[in-house]
Length: 307
Image: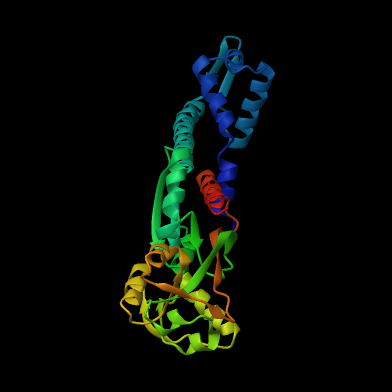
């Protein structure tokens, strides 16, 4: 059975031919229609004959005094005018949508990037593109990937080592996680790094499953045959820092999140032998989709700021 689109292709002629028919009807002459549109009269005649054949209806009566519409021709011209008006409105609406998309950008970012990097990036982007309309949703890395995959975000920034196969990925920099304790913790007074085995045995304050921080920790420990022992799971960097500074236990956090606390001596970073806690900072977007112009501009800003 033929599809609706295939049937419509047979029944609906070329819009340019319908527009020409409307001009012929208005001017009352093939010659005057040709002159108005800047084409030859024989070309107009051929296109009108083709239109009549495709519709199977005689539209025009040609005579020495000009060209007049047949009764079916007058009906077709009315329908053609309605169709051309709808097509014009459709084209204008699509163009308006295209213009809106050119100045609108939906961004999803994982928490560490959203808190410590994205504000600077978005500020610089607005300086370059003052008319841009930008929305930012803050999620953990797993949820950022889901937003991009579903089309709710144009692009996403994640901190996780791996990404879904449906997404393309571009690395924009690196981050490093740090093991953090209070100044009076026994690890803070050690002159040598602790072993990764010691870290693996210690109950730790960590981010929730699905976050880039948690995925990095789990992967790093798994590579050396160890498994994380959480003492508390928290869903924000701020809550994790507060708990660590309260002395509840060692925490693992991005170096980006604790700059001020380390400078003030509220927390101490502990070196660990035998484990790599670096992680890539990446932008992801849907496979097969072309990035909007604003998205490309944001990527340039992000890359420039991480050099």
